[in-house]
Amino acid sequence: MNMIREPARDVPVIHEADICVIGGSCTGVFAAVRAARLGARVAIVEKQNAFGGVATQGLVNIWHSLHDVHRKRQIIGGLTEEVIQRLRKRDAIEEESYFRLNTEELKIDLDELITEARVTPFLHTFFAAPYCRDGRLEAIVVESKSGRGAIRAQQFIDATGDGDLAAALGLAFQVRPNLQPPSMCARTLNVVGVSFQELMWKHRDEVGLEEDWGWSTTLPGVPGGRMHAETHVFRVNCAVAEDLTRAEIEGRRQVRAYLDLAWKHTDKKPVLLGLPSYIGIRETRRFACDHRLTEKDLLSGRVFEDAIACGTYPVDMHHSGDKPGITFKNLDGSEITYDGRGNRRAGRWLPEGVPGPDYYQIPYRCLLAGEYPNLLLCGRAIDADEGAFGAIRVMVNLNQTGEAAGVAAWCALQAGVPVRQVNPATLRSELRKGGSALP
Ligand SMILES: Cc1cc2nc3c(=O)[nH]c(=O)nc-3n(C[C@H](O)[C@H](O)[C@H](O)COP(=O)(O)OP(=O)(O)OC[C@H]3O[C@@H](n4cnc5c(N)ncnc54)[C@H](O)[C@@H]3O)c2cc1C
Image (tube, rainbow, N blue to C red; front, top):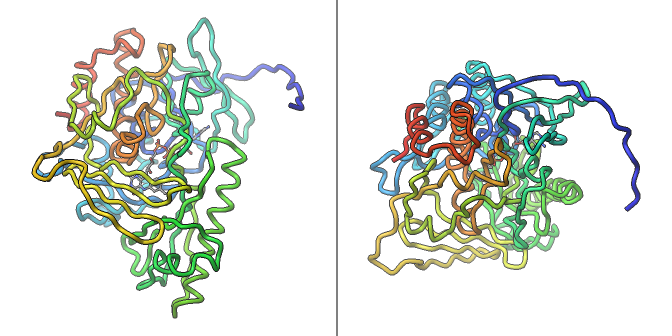
């Protein structure tokens, strides 16, 4: 490859903290806030202009149930529940068996959470490189309008989704050949009564769209407004810069293409109200950790002594381009597949009459990657097989991995031990004290 050599340079240390969180979705913000509430000095680095990740910058406005499948026992609490309560105060949330959020209000609530907990925020700041000394991660180098700077900390939490810090440290990861493909979301007005899926089943060839499956939902407080995730961009890995650029442009083209179908084949004139700051990325790198969570762990309701999160969201696999569509394996034993042509097939992964689990658990071990004593992973980069990933990847689940990483980093500091030696009982007890609804 053609190369240039950058001259070596000194980088100013722009901030020192106990814990530095990289990536500011709800996962990262919740990690930072939980650690700061325990008394740690915390910094958080986010490349966008606001916190919230896929929820705010990606427009994805649905959080799933906080209860077990029978809706009897609450299994998710903590900051997810707190944020829901904040949003309720301004009617910024609609509740059915799941929650639809006003994600613009969510941006402001996350700012407030950060400010109230005295976390030091760095927005418009990109993680660029790790700085290690004597086998220990000592600082990260970031880039912003002010140039390059270092943030020194004792503990680091990688909440970048893609695991950018872990990858730069050379930690082992996998990128599956059939990654769950990304979707360009969009907000529209004036599409009441229009089914973009039906339009695409009939007319997709006219606008160059492949067979596909997608969904849409309403926007709380916006009569006639909708949020769409109607299509996918296939055959890309969004952790590769060239693919990401291609995916953004192709995703926006797809939105224009299905809107054009409504203009042409219905009496509606849809208004494009908003596009996200970045394409919705479902899956990229997943890192080898002390435990790889399996579909079997989840669907058998395996109990972990170091459980730090619980969930009920089904195994949900958006298939890649060679076999477009989606498969859901629900905890009640049912299985539903939609193909890319509008056909639905229902069956069971469990025999009739055999009960599935009430909920599943995610262990702390899934956050422990590599040998660095002061690094934790959280969010969608943690270790899970294809099926388990399909279930744990939703926000109410990943939010809890953030809270666990924040509290675990604080526990490690308090005890003066590597993150791998944090006592699971202490971690779970601190999580519960801070509002988590762990069993
Ligand atoms: C189209 C789509 C629809 C979905 N639908 C739902 C749904 O209905 N409900 C649900 O719960 N889940 C849904 N999901 C899944 C869920 O949104 C994601 O799995 C989840 O948000 C991932 O969270 P995360 O914190 O790991 O990553 P992200 O939300 O991607 O957050 C990563 C954060 O890190 C920042 N970052 C990344 N790299 C750097 C860097 N180098 N320097 C600084 N900052 C960086 C990013 O800007 C971002 O804020 C959907 C996903 C997609 C794509």
